Length: 347
Image 1 (cartoon, rainbow, N blue to C red):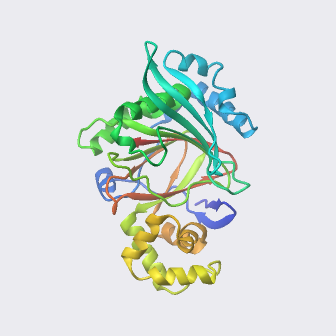
Image 2: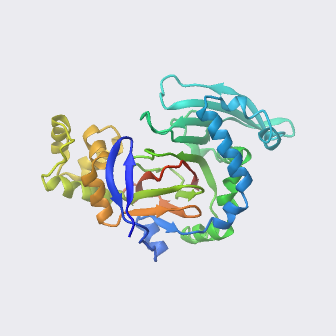
Image 3: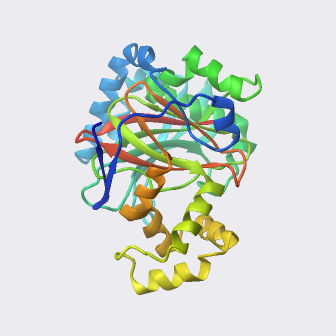
């Protein structure tokens, strides 16, 4: 069986075995915060969106060459898809966020009237690592990380429509009847809405660190691999806390942990509540390094089966509705090519 190298942000984290998982009990995985992969469910949808995918790849290359989105969007094909529906208001740049490249602002219009304002597409680097060219195009509205997005369903839906106007390959998810039926069955028959949309380009050395996407009013996340391949570490928070506790109990800490890291980990080592709080803070340096940047811990999760491989056409569903059982997840780019993916919240 071929082994797949896991390298991210300058850290060699060993390898992942090939594709061995079959998720046989979707409801159980979803309810218990385990990842649910559906192989090949988007293959036909991808085939029908090849032109849009190619256009988006050209967009991304222009961004990587230093062009601004507001130099690209006023021209075809974007001017056609945005016309009479969205006004491009302008662009901003947050000097306090070194990962941000630009934020492009829009208003949603209908019959000449503004019906939803302060919509935006935020273009960002995924990391500070110089050799990681991974990009993220995120769509939302209002004051980022301050407003409760699920409380304003009008603007939330308008920002979702904006994502589809700029990136029509969003239909790989939104018009995929088989996928929608699969998600609907997990939601007890409720039809899903796809909001807070993100388009990812994960490149070599790139990918997200372990995190959750818990948001009030959202049931979870659907992620579709469009091009390229990724490896995921994914497990419920309760299991992650247990894995950290057991790892620290063995008293065989990786050599890359410095003395300050070790002292900070000693303080939380055997208290699940402290471990949980440290995870939620996203600023515990010792813990961040341990769970994301050490081969020993990453390989421990892989040995327990907490990983999935995604190839073009595959989808992974991540439950995010309950704090202790939400699925924490981490992503690695596999191979030497940057891959495109769609990640939408499920409302």
